[in-house]
Image (tube, rainbow, N blue to C red; front, side, top):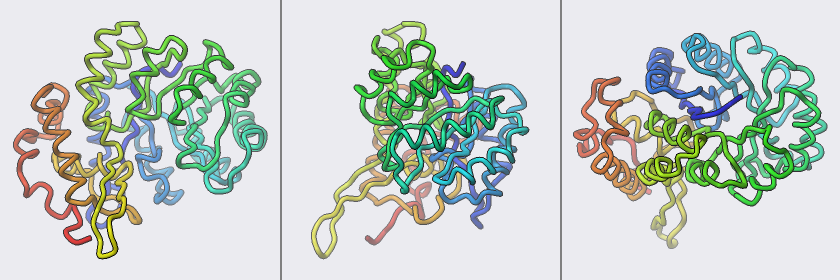
Length: 345
């Protein structure tokens, strides 16, 4: 059973752009000390799109080794090629992971029936000893595994009992619960909708695969536990406290150009990784084509983080102890953000 907070862990890089194994170990330890239920290795937040397959396997195996059974580990092995997914899953199936996450096939755009019959089903059959977690995220994949086909997968395969739901539609999630029944664990894939999925009686969410738990693992875990237990007051309180940062998983701004204004959307994991760098968590840069935030976007991110620190410092205070930094000071020290924004657009 997958229940609670599963941190979609960022992948830290060295100044040369290589995977930073020592920082990865430290980040994993931070999550475990803060009591998360598990870690997602090499999801979207872990920059799966720009890791090569050797790096995928390396990061998954290292995280499984570092956790050493102290929390669950989910490995992101999905792709838009079923052959690649099969090969990659085979490489890590003995690494000690508890499940694999299969993102919908991006770009090629199969129908929901094709996703079920040609992708999710065959992988679940081939790797019957691993829990297979479909990842519904049409905003990035350009296609969607629909609740009706998810229900058939859940019915026909003993190892499909959880979904990561990032459709953005609570109605879709309610339909998923209606089709699949109470035996399916629904994990929110959108930080901003986790609370709603936990407290909605027609959804009965089990937790979240969270981005901002890279920064607030204890808080997100506590909210998930409160929601599952039915402690609405505590779930409400924690959600309100963390919402400013939940709203910064992606940061949208209007930026000027010689030809007029244009939308700039700093998408996950750029904001969270930028803030982690500012706070001294040694996350490193993102890989191109992701780059830097704008000054306006960074100001919005810092305003949210400062608000959380001022109103609920206990949510970010564990960073100070684990990484030996002064969170409050770094949030107001402009030098900590040097090199992290585009000075010219």
